Image (cartoon, rainbow, N blue to C red):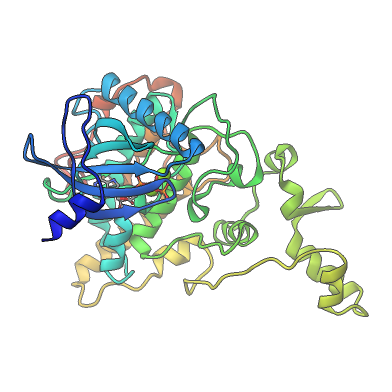
Length: 397
Ligand code: ATP
Ligand code: MG
Ligand code: MG
């Protein structure tokens, strides 16, 4: 029978507490290894076990994942960490570090896919956004940067219906100990990481903004086929370049930009201009001589500007007229919300607490662009996040 085959082929492990984990199913794979659904006969419980590849670098990084998650477990109560995956145990099995977690359900990418990449209604987008923000408040408060927020790393809690949890702290680091420069999955990679500029917890807020947009649109907002393409899309969609001082101080600026008359211009535009100027050269000749042609992927949306992409996204069919009006207003809020998240300047980008007070989250009316309270007034205070329960837009975390 199926169990027995897996039982024989995979693992039968004794931890310190002499617990056995009997592999029942494969839940997922990632860069670090495989995640198996296991049955623990001693407690008659199901858990998820991440089996890390047997390589020193992965082993070390997985130990960091264990210590960061254990620290979050200690520092925060169950309520505070309710949108962060719970670590149960870890052990070594045949040179593989294994980490056991509470068993969760599908990830958000799978959910988006099940919905045929059409995106979710705004009330669901809001609900998920609130919950991810709740997790991010806690993560930032602990001085941690997740470094790999993406739909695949956010899972639906199997039992408690529409609740979600952030997983995969395998790339996480402490703020102030940002050792790696090649982090974040491309579509969710922040401009400062891309450009090689000192990064902070604000990189998680950029990824968060990308996820919120994707939940609504069904497809990645910045679907860059290469790093160059990614940057070009950011500039197109946001309608501006990264600020000059960021470009001046970032390490990789000259991978993407050329300075022409003191102005930073994307290499691609420069390249086109030069071809025009030296029309004797063919594009291929020029390319062979000077620069590589950037890889450009396909565009997913019919519009370029963020406002248009969101506001003109096809409305669901058969929406009653008053619902259309409501939806239109909510979309304006969503655009304003996204603007504070996918903000080029990490110093201006909102913190989790600032974002959690935005009308898109609280359900309040948006009369003018949201101007968040300064970060200094916000000491550690997850409980102080207020959601207007009288307003249908508000809700529980
Ligand atoms: P990445 O390539 O994103 O770094 P990874 O190797 O670090 O991935 P995880 O993201 O931790 O691995 O897990 C891989 C996948 O396994 C997840 O996307 C998810 O689908 C599944 N998974 C992980 N943890 C759980 C869990 N606790 N319950 C159910 N499924 C899980
Ligand atoms: Mg992952
Ligand atoms: Mg990972």
